[in-house]
Length: 288
Image (tube, rainbow, N blue to C red):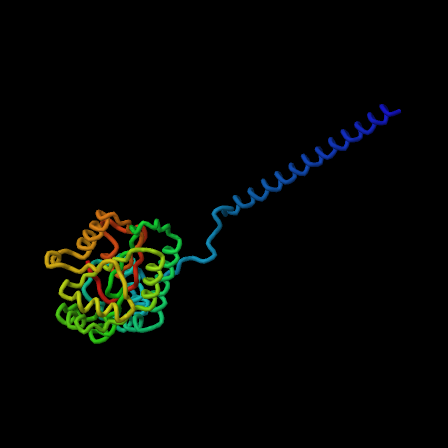
């Protein structure tokens, strides 16, 4: 009786397994047929399953250079973006039609917000970076429009509309009244607290060392490891070459440049570049 009962149960289980398998095969065949019908219908309609059509298409309008339908503030915003992306040819002054736009930008909330965004990203990177603790990890900072703001000077000179005048600017520097950029001051202190060596690499001349030191300290930058200014032998060099040479000297002294902050591409490009660079906005002037 036990054997017959076991055999009966085994036969029933086999029957149920075969029935389930048949039903599964039938279901798969039905799905395949349905898919073929959908694909045939799509092909017949001339459409495609992939890639999906764009829900939003690029806007159409006048060709580049015509610009009749583009408001001046939009054209100037595009000009500023091209400058920040280093896509402009070398330029010496803000386009006349963009003077009001640049003034509004640097004196408004957008400029401050952009500065703060750069500082936040730099802070995030600095906190995530692995500082070795041997005193050789360094961060390079530019001074003008990076740590200190010269907006009071440029307010009197068209916010970049006027051609740059070295003598007039030197007079401003010698007053020692450039205010700190708040977001940069906060980042600077944080970088110091994290253990980075800080090198201030500026295009100011060595003759302005005393007033620059006083200005920096008055604005809250009380400590740094080295302040590097242009020597007479550096005067004819482009900023890119001059700053690259100084960074190379840092590396030769055994420092690892993990971070670099500057408002000009010439602060950041060249050779002996940092592991990560942060470009602050500046639509008022360009230094090659």
